Image (tube, rainbow, N blue to C red):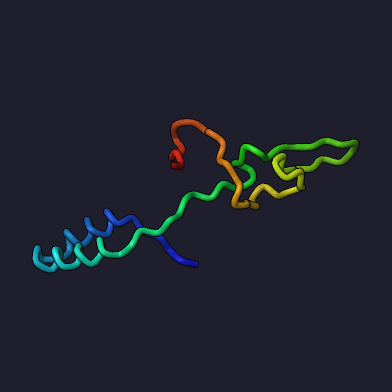
Length: 92
């Protein structure tokens, strides 16, 4: 699985560790790398479509968007994160 890093963190570390000439060259190389198109994953338990369904003695967790049973740590590409307050980063 690929790993993603913050470009600014890399540049800050290089600035601390390298001479100005070496830093200028390495910063040029780092800035030439294209950014990955990633976003935080919305697990089912954090999704707006996640809920409970009670039917008789059966207690199930379901996705209301697709009307399917699901597990709290599952996710799909259609997940929309609930607004949990100001401590969560907003997605664009």
